[in-house]
Image (tube, rainbow, N blue to C red; front, side, top):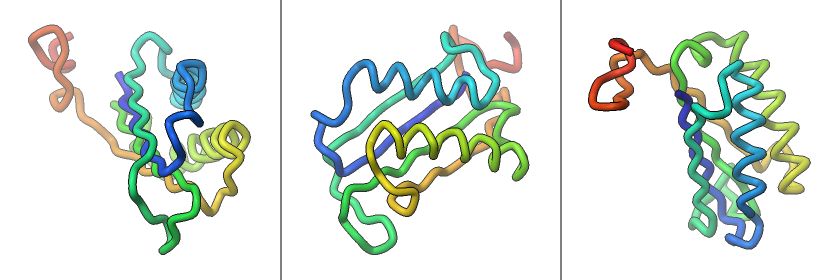
Length: 118
């Protein structure tokens, strides 16, 4: 049950429903998780800086159980995510930052319980 949050200073017109679906699909494939388990939030029009500049940029946060817990895994995920974002948003790699967070099953609640008991 991965969680994806994309923050950007790009306007909302840069992000369609199709983009959100494609982002979820891209990250699901990268993490080896089912698309129907993805949780994706896109927040456009945010006042932000990346590397000290307010030029168009994205900060993407990816949190997941068992898929973001090693440098080797995250290096592979990062390459796929950067490829998608640079292509879809026409941004250079230096305007994108990705954060990976490893979650434990007891840290994710669903259906009135936590993933440890599902």
